Image 1 (spheres, rainbow, N blue to C red):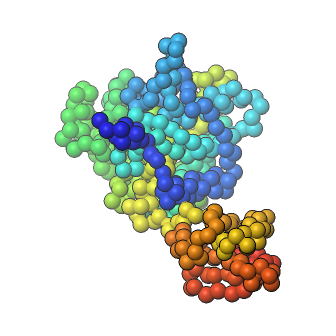
Image 2 (image 1 turned 90 degrees about the horizontal axis):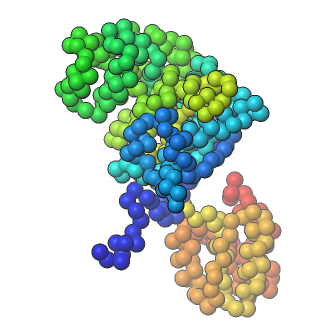
Image 3 (image 1 turned 120 degrees about the vertical axis):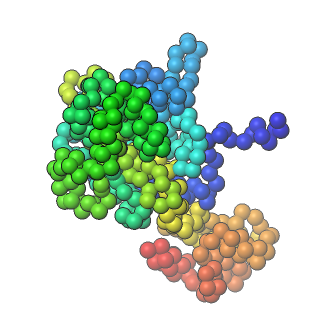
Length: 424
């Protein structure tokens, strides 16, 4: 194995150059803007958590197969946080009497999952979580769904690009019991339904047969999934609220959406791409028993969702929605004419920065202006400021517009005013 191979990043772990980082920052900034718009407070928690935090709370698959484990010198096992909701539930339980309920909390931070890397899925990624805890109201459910839709819309997506499917664990459970399926078998059947879109229909039927379902029960399940018209009537209340939020065109009832995490108790939902990606973009639901499982004396119902930067970037790319972004923040480039005007150039840069104008200074003396112009052009910096001997003597600055190649002489005050207006 070559040294170069050894030094590559781990599989599923990204290294982002500025041109890639600026895209990630765009997506994360959209999430922060939506969080602020809906009145959410940002919080955070440990990157490393004891495995007990997730046991019997998260799915068995997540804990046993999809988590990065760290074992300390005392043989205690920790997980590099694969999700945030258990941490949040513990935090709410610890301060349930001092928090103003319901809380509206959001988090943007790194998560780690040991999954097979693919487009839109990495082993290290930034996840965006939005949760309302302390309300059992359907309004809270609709509010969270509205936030999910608003986040995707803020990135430029429309109803042509994605659909948000909703379902209810509670409603689906009642329906399956009506089909004559034993309560002790419900969880297993729901888990199979969750895999329906991932396998061929004969495989799906075989899985239901292996779960000891009769041909009549299997037919009832397939009919429910293919023709959920009657089933949709159970969602009249939330669909009416969703209409009030003005997002009905994005939302559709789908009894096959059940979500994989064990702590969901009520409404569950997923947004899926309609384009080439064809993947789930975000998902969430209601969890009414989770916080009490961490010691809360009150039964605090919660609802929330999460998405990742990896999937959103892949979605925007496949949907031709990624904006053209320049990773270079500089608005003006101050050139260095020669040693005699170096002090003038540095003082100009200082003055511009004091006026909150992003400014870059060329860090070498003796480099031809032509080369400095090419540098500024390659970095797409819109203006170049030049102070030669004449400008230094007269207290002026020659300003070159790198877009139309025009130039003009300005005083420093006029340059500051021009750049401030250009920034608007």
